[in-house]
Length: 163
Image 1 (cartoon, rainbow, N blue to C red):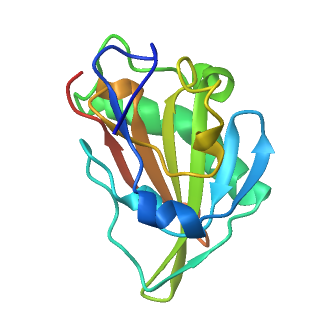
Image 2: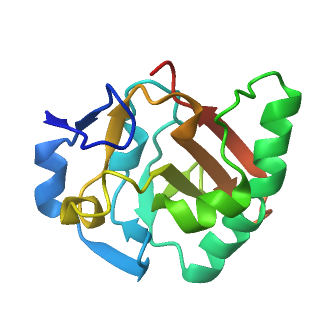
């Protein structure tokens, strides 16, 4: 286990080493990367979508569609009573959160899964570009969102547990 720098107190960053060796990544910007495989689904303190029978590589357009829905995802979380004072805004996420994406095929359908975590404390560690980041704790600053790639419907969202 690797302790997170100063992003959020008491976070633990765990990266599954066996999955890392085969992982390849494609950077789509300074804070966005697409990972190969479904390693992102192995989360520590939040629920994640079900595994699938395969993987695929989401494009920048797929990711843009998911990120365009962040205002609705975050607002609906607030309406569902999940809002905490530190829940980020969609605008803040676009400029201050690292984003790792993967494509999952489940029951013949393609899904895009994104894992979001604050850049502070991680931006200087290059491993996040090739390794699935798994954070235990962190509260609502750390979250995951899944979108159906065909319908563009959000099919899953979950925030990390306590800090």
